Amino acid sequence: MSAHPATRAYVQRRTAEGLSKKEIIRCLKRYVAREVYPCLRSGA
Image 1: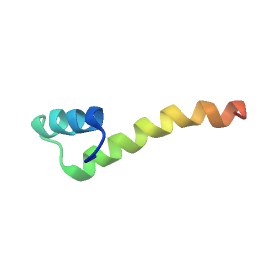
Image 2 (image 1 turned 180 degrees about the vertical axis):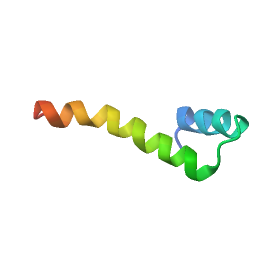
Image 3 (image 1 turned 45 degrees about the vertical axis):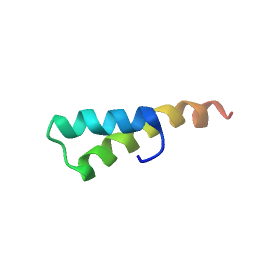
Image 4 (image 1 turned 90 degrees about the vertical axis):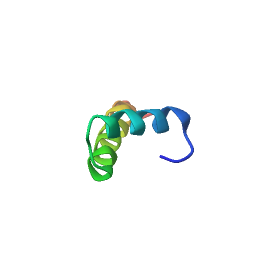
């Protein structure tokens, strides 16, 4: 959350929407899971 520019922008946007840091981290984890799961299913 402190180094990746796209993630920093996302955190700023979600903070402006009123989400807490804990909620933002949960959203980021879900995003990562959606990206990784298809790779795991395909065996790559």
